[in-house]
Image (cartoon, rainbow, N blue to C red; front, side):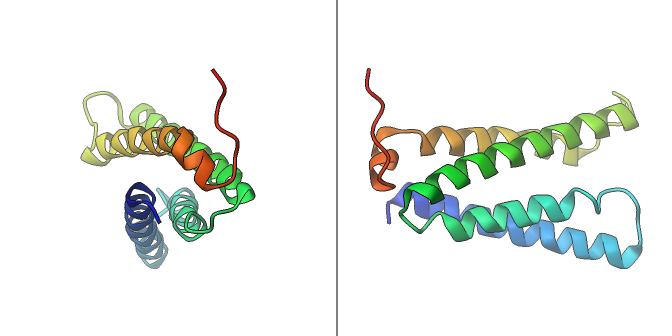
Length: 127
């Protein structure tokens, strides 16, 4: 397994476990804010970490789509937090959401490179 894929799998697994833990603590406290999106994010990160080591074309397609949906979900959640809290009550978690979105965009871009495409059996991009 290439080093970049291994690093993505490790980071996504850790992020998935963290967001599943956050979802469980929200449910235990019975708080309304956050439980809707935390399990989605946790399951998405965990699924991408589980799927990426398999070197098949369908895994590459599903992983790219899943990462795109995750980035959109986190970005919409961050915008909703910004609208709800106002510009001057921006929590630190909002900044971390934007960092996660940039990370996911980078992962999706890495998965689109020619070496990774050939690893998963997808034809390289012709210039």
